[in-house]
Length: 193
Length: 311
Image (cartoon, rainbow over all chains, first blue to last red):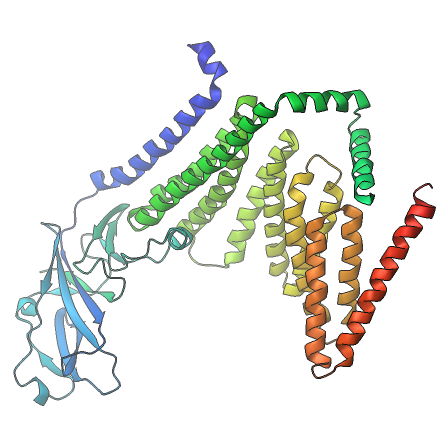
């Protein structure tokens, strides 16, 4: 056995070293997830979908003011690029993402610019717009890095995926729009109550 | 006839520099004829080795690209730097065993791609901003030392190739840190690369010179043109390119000859568009000048054959 190993060092090294890298990589990827607690808060995300022509007469702005989500509407101007604003909620217990409907009042055309519209599913929620949630998880968004490899191998389509991370544990949040190469996902806030 | 004589002259020079006798060369000829089949197998092995290397690199690259976002710091460093070091060790082990000679080059090249990527990823993960040139200098410096030291021990041409890559990278970034002009950096790196190639031409590492003649001469002419453009010395570019043609015949490099020819043609085209756009006389002057040079070349060859070859 010893003489075989000595005579075939290259084969031994060629098997052992990649195996060692794989084991270390697996440990580095798995261990933080085992030792860190799962997320304790839901995550709210906004998604701006670019369309050729929008049917809505208004565009919706979403911001967090005094721990509440505030939705305001502005009339679409002639030169405005068409876009549709959507809201997604990441459920930390089920690890699923669902869309929150933004209801438009019937008199939407009559409302002045900056008028607030209620979104029933968000009205009672206390939301923090800090990137780091109280449980330590931080919104990391979609990183643009991995650049050379991404460009070289053309793996750029899942630009709408985002990540949340805490002490090396990273959770990918896939949106229903993940397979679109266009659109813009933004952080809105963590649901803290 | 001249080409045959040149070839014989080169064979004699190589034989003398390596201490080979006519008997050694004769024996090698016999071996070559007998081992035609073995050579085909060797070529196939080399091709498969390179293809294997490309597939390994592609697989690793796709994996990194797909999962980069969900990798933490440790995973990112292990998959890039860890893989690079592992491949480099495999290449070192392969260097000790002639049975794996064919996989040595692909392994060294993959390691030379992955290791600097890994070091840059490590710096990126732990740094808090700063000048990217410091990271590049550190990476190039580490790799220059590693590849240079291993080349010194192994004398492998692939390692000399990668040492040159990191040497040029290191020098370029260092000069940039000292606020040297881009043209000056290109000029200096290009000239030193061509000079180094001329030095390597008569060594066992001459296999890497065509690539470096190409890179070095392009860098040199780029730097030179940007330096002398719109100055009194502008015609020096043409003179240097002509000198490059002379150098290419001296060092017997077709690559250098090609780049110098392109440089001459490009300069003439540039000069025409700048000064003689609507002139009929200029193309005629060029044609006459060209014919004169061809006549001179024929004359020079005759002089060489009649008076110099016997000397």
